[in-house]
Amino acid sequence: MLIFHDIAEIREFVRQARGKGHSIGLVPTMGYLHEGHLSLMRQAKKQCDTVIISIFVNPTQFGPGEDLASYPRDLDRDAAMAEGVGVDAVFNPAAAEIYPPGYSTYIDVERITEKLCGASRPGHFRGVATVVAKLFNIVKPDYAFFGQKDAQQVLVIKRMAADLNMEVEVVTVPTVREPNGLAMSSRNVYLEPDQRQAALILSSSLNRAAAAVRSGERDAAKIRQLVIDLIKAEPLAEIDYVEIYSHPDLEPVEVIKGPALLALAVKMGRARLIDNIIL
Ligand code: AMP
Image 1 (cartoon, rainbow, N blue to C red):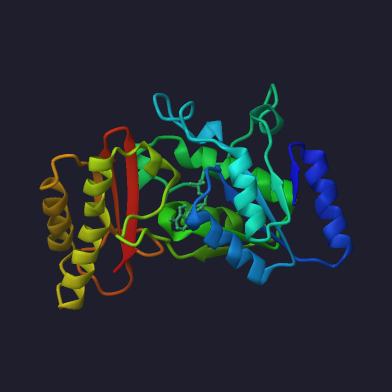
Image 2 (cartoon, protein in one colour):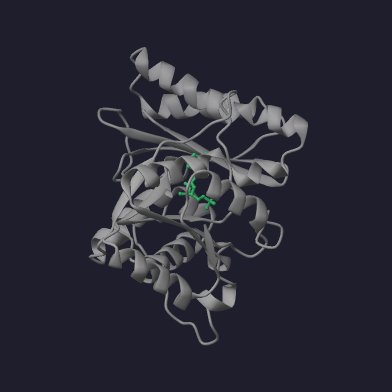
């Protein structure tokens, strides 16, 4: 497995793979890899001849006071894990390689970014869309793989790719969870043992909501309140949002008739955790 830090080098690697007639898969990540990331890479290996992952803690998607400086990083460990699932190359640029002095161009996906994490993290999806567009332009992948864990993010990327006629198929991969239900996240390292236990309320409340829907409940406000009440009963958890929107359009829903996204963000000590389920 090769590791590149320069845009020119990864482009040359892609050019050579293309010369062999290879299809290219890209898995964008911020590193500190876990099984969730590896599941994206395994899916990419199934679908593509050459798999490239990016590891880049993208400064433009962090707001002031967020965890850009403390975000966990371990390139050696990540490289060993990526190699273990057969990744062909890692692209790990410095911030100045992606945003050189004078950098001035950003992508704003409208409407679907106004709610959920877009509302609580202003500018977040502008940074995400911008860096992913740049990675798409650098690597020119046939397929790019994103996790359902970040449900709104994958919708934003799909919207951007469609709106800007990008020749990439965006593939959504299911959320990977710990055996106890906790959605895997690089940010779970911020959790103290008691918070990690308390964090189970995210997935368990989502499951309770899904069970209510299976039992016939269709009132979105009631389902949302059920989740809010469950999380509020956990003293270590502080709700950022609990919302239900139609999926994939993210329109308000009162009565659940078709697929609906139940998404939540919860602060737990230093960590802000997100999770979701499609009802
Ligand atoms: P990140 O490094 O957190 O930016 O995540 C990189 C990619 O991995 C994104 O597409 C995420 O949605 C995906 N991802 C992160 N955690 C999980 C998980 N637990 N299950 C599936 N995909 C995940």
